[in-house]
Length: 94
Image (cartoon, rainbow, N blue to C red; front, side):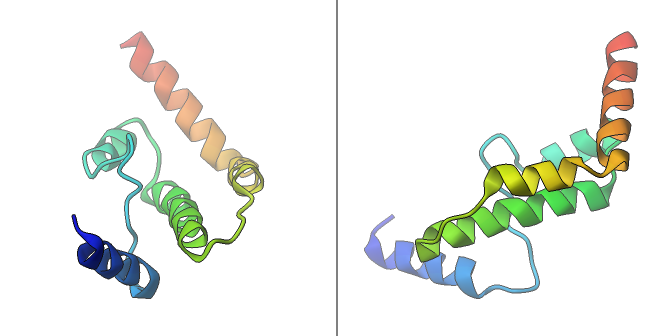
């Protein structure tokens, strides 16, 4: 990738509004069905992806982002934690 491609990618990340970019570091498109199979809902996956996108956008703009605070807020929803934990335990027992 040269500097022109990098600028185009940065612009695309900043300006695309109605789509989510997957984090891609250990979270590719194949992670979505895997997490769904473990019992996470699509809403939970999308909520996490919103946080990952906000981190990327803040980095591009040179802004600070409270990752720990956002993830803590996400995990405070009991449905998020309990569904993931119970399904992981079921998968381990199988």
